[in-house]
Image (cartoon, rainbow, N blue to C red; front, side, top):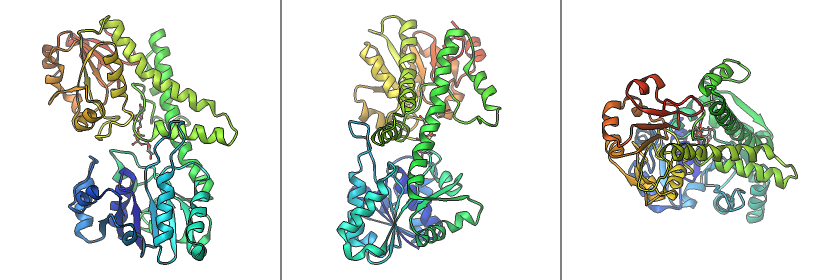
Length: 437
Ligand code: UDX
């Protein structure tokens, strides 16, 4: 099929590349000319494992092209995926101006029958607005447009695998023809066993928010338990193991730590809560999830202040700056929230990250960065493990300790083994587990 993808962020670019890999003829479109030029050369604008290789393959085979000309992208498309950003407004509501503008472009340039697919995360009810926009802009074409909600569940860092081996493909549509087109689009994955769930549009829109909010709730539940464990002598990792072995609960997303970040959970949770409120329902549970998540950073900062006393003149090292491993994304990263708090208390904060240093520096210019973990730890009074990159597992702990002013480690992701840290002579403060003082 002929596919246009509007927006080349994480969702749009991975959608473009995987759709081309599945055999469709894809044009990825973005307003940002510079980005399009980079993409045409096969350069990914962000770090995502496997993406450069996939771009090379699909650009090479001619299945994937990029254009900043919306008309060129849209005019021959059978399906247009809207993958534009839906950033939070000051109120927490999703800003849908880019979705409206993409819908207007589709209306303006559609050359024939076209299925318009919302892939960006949007509040329930957006499809009706997209449809109204299409109809208003192109009244003569009303029966040529079908609107579909097909939310993307890919995670940064494993986005390509998540797209090609999805837990489920969710399609909400308004007509049998639109379902048929979406079945054809996803046939290569369904033939290999992927589960296709078909619902009405509002259910699909709501389900995406429901999943992200539920996962965030699991994390906040564990972080609340971590606070309880710290006060009672319990061990949150063991509690997670006990809970996770109950099939009804499941073992994923039970890791306590600095909390969730990134461009999805924080904004989706707020947008979902705002949507509920607009619909006249007080979804207070979501506000608590958010409060507990903020508390996870505060609790870690308090721990550091408690151990170091005054932070003025002290140096704190942050290992890991991205919001999670295998990405260079620092948006709403707990590491940076913690860094800002420590700086406000007078500490000098220095960071190291395998991929996210440049992004961290532009988000937080006052952050010092170092080219490796040992340089970052030099003269440091406290080292905080913020993001569990695999390479931190094999750090030379003796070398790290030698470099530091105080042998103090705060583990915001419970990555280190307490026995090992004790053996090496560190004071070690994990999350929701007994410290080694
Ligand atoms: C998420 C959803 O998982 C994905 O389905 C959706 O499409 C986009 O949002 P992503 O933001 O890439 O994906 O990251 P994810 O792997 O879900 O992690 C989110 C945050 O939760 C990270 O900051 C991570 O460190 C944190 N987390 C995750 C925990 O603190 N504890 C856990 O047990 C799991």
